[in-house]
Length: 121
Image (cartoon, rainbow, N blue to C red; front, side, top):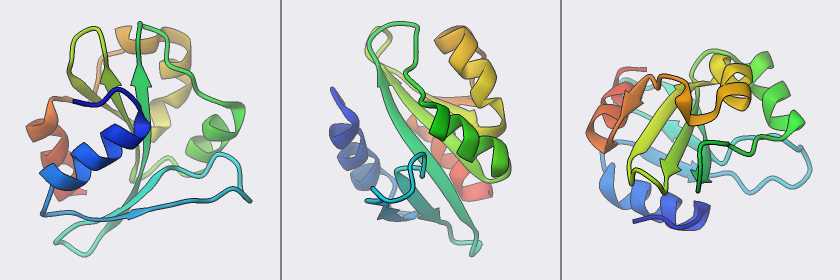
């Protein structure tokens, strides 16, 4: 599966056909999440993609700021290289995620459960 964020994006796009994804290529506003999702309920949400080789998750101060200002319908999706699993966290948990890394209990784990969250936003 994903070895980097680009691979994770491709994997997510191919395996979640019920979500309309837009990749946000934004170099002018630091901290903007990687993806804008739109579900069949007509709701938008954002997703920051991360790939973590170990427990620690690299999160910039700008990313923390974004998620603190936008705590609803924002998520961080992490591919754990160690476990091979996807872990989904709510944006409002970003400070705890930055401090605890992957020891923090995820909102959802695995593609199916993450997709359920996205479909129910």
